[in-house]
Length: 118
Length: 117
Image (tube, each protein chain N blue to C red):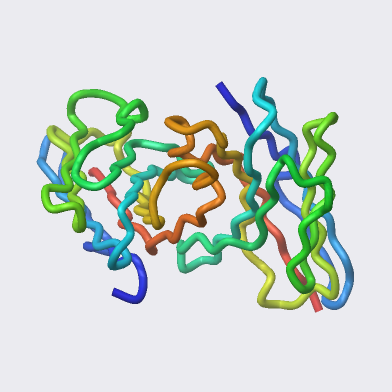
């Protein structure tokens, strides 16, 4: 698509429930990133995919968080047994890829999914 | 680990005036990239400007320019002729140029810019 699309835009759930957040990256972008942005803070890295594989999942806070990208395009961030502290905006971004000097590649972000856990 | 510090939680500027947002970072690497992103209330992060550490020349993009001081690990953003549409959160970000670790951006905590008439 023309941009990075994230659904839902807003999600309200109860403590202990399971949620899925979806990211549809720009067509052809092989790299996909998930970030979490708490109120008043900068985005914090969660996980990065290169193609279908998670190249770096060092930012996932615990085993309640999991993300997949089975066909190398759409990605889903899954949160089990949600806690109130999980409330945040979850941002997805994509970029053309990785490799030498690819750090200069610009990440294009979606508008985020705001998760509220009651 | 790299860290990015933005020491100005809020800044205000009058329309048509110039404002400078500060950013410092800590790294042991010599090759990296620095970015400024803008986040309006719509939440979508938008790239403002990018600097490659191996380039001595400061990057410019129309009304936006940076002052990159590598030895001081400083990367400030100057906005000239400020416009109402510039009002937003601004985030400074760091990215390693090393293959294998070039994946993630590390962001600062942001500076909220207000533009007044």
